[in-house]
Image (cartoon, rainbow, N blue to C red; front, side, top):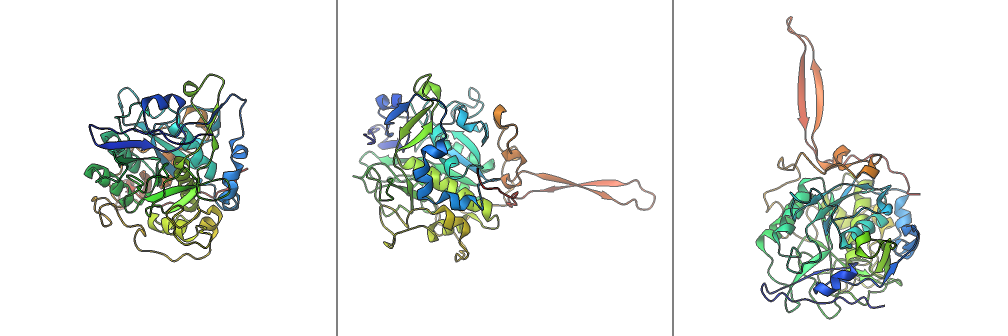
Length: 427
């Protein structure tokens, strides 16, 4: 089963743009650096939690679900968008946003590549009750578009930050044409800093090339959780990049994902693939579990918890697994983790607040994420959740004074405080 990525060097820009993990078979012909699915599955509807049980067992997900399933937390996935699929019918999935052409694509439901759809599912594997906020920044078909240095990425990252994201997964990256890290576009750096300054946990894929020691951008940015991969035995995944920038690890070996029908064929609902895109998405789901269970924690302390409770097998920090395999049960349920005042991984621009934003910034959009899909009407939307930073209106009736009529006073309360409803174990 070949899970090596194909490569592309963009001579005009000097960049090599790539995404990690499950990708469309048809994409291989374009030269984009994406992992190729090992098999298309022409089957009836599958229980993807059962199909991918090995990965959930490896991260001890079930132990975490007794305390948190991610309810009330929004995870943005900045990728190729999302597609309708039976797997999402009982999930909370927003319509999201397309940064490619908002006039032609009113939302993120335009994924014909499958990567974004698969990564949305991977987040939900770890955290079944999160709200997914898909942000489409790439078609996945045009090598020169969006992956890494394009304006679509900056816009998509900022849109997600302004529209309710609590956790942001960026399952792709940018390298130089020689496979080395490059100086990032300042707008790229500032967009990621902006998200971090708004108290969002930002997570990125660590790479799918064992011959390289560079994870690419934004995984190389300070403050971003760069994620490597594990195989089904919990050892470093043989296809992963090893680098001192890797902070955590999660399953990257072959898993089953939902796919858009146009991606494979009319009778294939699923495909199998491997890659650290999924590793990043799974860590994103675990971060959401922690955020739901501990609404008092800011993003810096959620990252601290993920790192402090990771299973390093006694090896300490390594270039393959970082601080270790993410442990959802321990991250959610550990009694004591030393608090931090700042992001333990630093900041893209050197210090907190360098983008000019803060968690209480009034510039965050009041329009938040758009309505969920029609099949999600019974699910909570980000617009209904206090954690999205939307405005709550409280009407206080004032008593009649000196024969004046009663006066209604409207108070606008803006907060990103995450007071979450009680969660129930996923069944």
